[in-house]
Length: 150
Image (cartoon, rainbow, N blue to C red; front, side, top):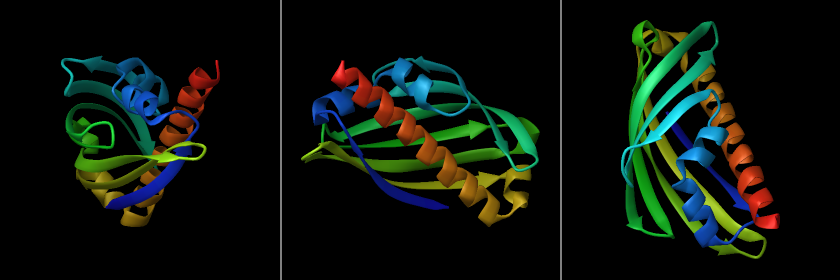
């Protein structure tokens, strides 16, 4: 499954990049996130509860950040296990560019899923993933933009 989108965030590029590396901000913005622990500048551990169609599961996962060219570009990879519900793994390329209204954030992500989740059908999975990504970036833009306005 592939996801691509872009969003304008009302904050300077350096502020957006720093927020994308702030575990507290990310925890507040990730839908269903119960816990996000930063083990190092590049290693995060997360516990997230998600409901996809009839399947609700608690995922335990890890995320590795790879700063390719900070603050313009970085990539991330991650994987999560939801027990009987299945697993998810994937990665994303994130680009930040200056924009007249702040910062343009572009992402290109790919995920693979297995287990019960994979049996739900690709349209349901893809639709849910798009909704979750949109919700995260809306939460993120509101949080970072509000912090910058204050």
